[in-house]
Image 1 (cartoon, rainbow, N blue to C red):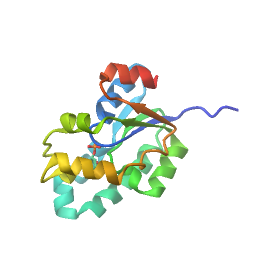
Image 2 (cartoon, rainbow, N blue to C red):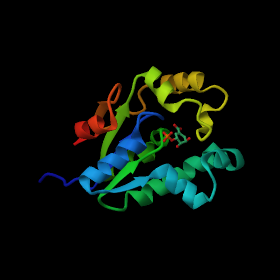
Image 3 (tube, rainbow, N blue to C red):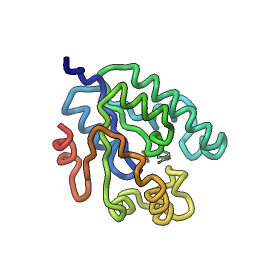
Length: 165
Ligand code: S3P
């Protein structure tokens, strides 16, 4: 029998539109939006740059993994993840097991334009353009495990939402 979809999980590099598309998708489907980064911030009582600075990236990744697990225990959720959630094998397994995983991608130049110089993204500190290009190279195949891949280049949030639906 066909397995019913419990959750929709959006993955992809920073600036591919996971949070904005997630919000739009939640409205259209009636599913509940969960933003993983936002949950981490609420739980830690710190901003993402503060977590990276005061506790370190490894501790951020531990929180991310644990909140990912609990978020996917819920049913009927659109989960907007952070770009690095795919780095851990265990996270990839949980996402594939508990949801329909959709990877959003975008042309590098468009990611640079969308993200700009963002103080809230610690991995881009010290030169967003160079850092994005380096991360894109490092994570070239990191999102390939998704069930579906959608190119958002040149598309509006409404168009991407329609593509997913
Ligand atoms: C990260 C992406 C960020 C956030 C953190 C680390 C990454 O989320 O989780 O700064 O490793 O790519 P967005 O993809 O929503 O920017």
